[in-house]
Length: 177
Image 1 (cartoon, helix red, strand yellow):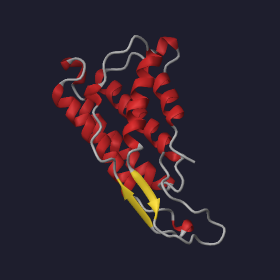
Image 2 (cartoon, rainbow, N blue to C red; image 1 turned 60 degrees about the horizontal axis):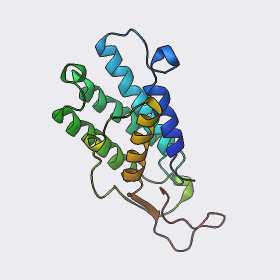
Image 3 (cartoon, rainbow, N blue to C red; image 1 turned 90 degrees about the horizontal axis):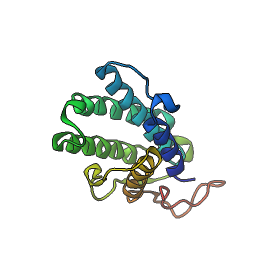
Image 4 (cartoon, one colour; image 1 turned 90 degrees about the vertical axis):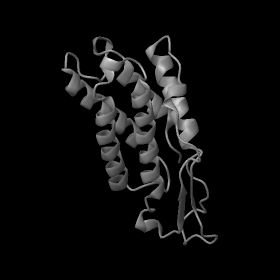
């Protein structure tokens, strides 16, 4: 099983769609509440994205990484609206938050029940959200973000290092792509 690009895209599409059209972001919230809700929705989407990886991080470790991403994004989004789209200082901080999430996911050990040796190498280069252009609609924006995240995240390598898996366990190599 791999990471779920289609699930990420679906979550982002719902997130980007205005509440009046069925989106998931709370309507009529003050800027601070809105920024916190955005951070939570992004973190939840990323947790769901990595949930299907086998033998990926345990649900507890993925939850911790997601909570840390949410906290980082709350800081990134603070004051964003006053600066407009992709202010340089916010873009660098957004990239750093996602790079830290990947580092935490790839560094997490394989769940103990697998009893396997594990190597996790984060994506070799950082993500670059500032490279995204504008989109004509919410579905295109969600697709653009999901493609960027997936093409970046799956350059990381998580694999087992044993040539002889335990009885009943599949021989695993790269698991993210």
